[in-house]
Image 1 (cartoon, rainbow, N blue to C red):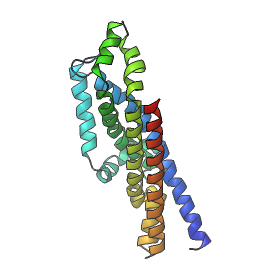
Image 2: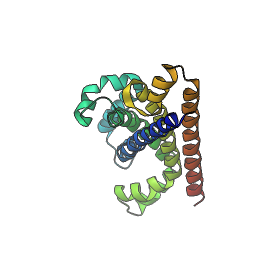
Image 3: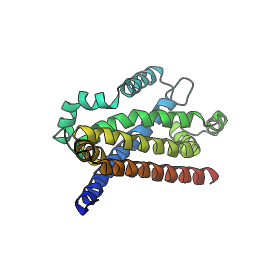
Image 4: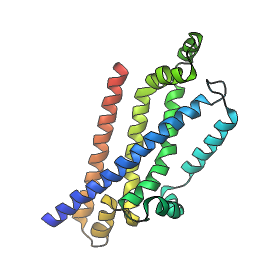
Length: 217
């Protein structure tokens, strides 16, 4: 493989990491609180609001039901409004974030629902406010599961970013299509696949390790 191709691979890896990192940060910033709200407002919970809960659940389910490739195309006007363009790595962050937020919210919701209800009732009996229960009971107890949820989300984003690259988002997907597929460069195609697999393995290892450490702690 030539130095030029190696440089393209490094640049594409940087673009993919940028897309995944930025969209994962946005998903964590919005998806984590959203997951908490979905649990806290559910029937019988600390901030029971059935109407709000059903509304949020409907929005989350609707967004998750749309395949990512269709979502990217459907929100092009919104992407252009936010990023100023619908092409490139920065533009790809918009649909990536929108796809990741409800996905992470459901994973966070699942982790929080696994917290022992007895702990919540004990905190209530001691006079803890809903905010204190969320901050000192729900989230800390569910943290190992939340970390695994974030890990799964990041891995999904790596796959989504490859699809985004295939239609102008840049990164490894774009490189694989333009240089690997269209120019019949099997070595480039293989290199991008190996890099994507390596990214997934590293993220999974780090997530599993952190989750186990938090669980023991």
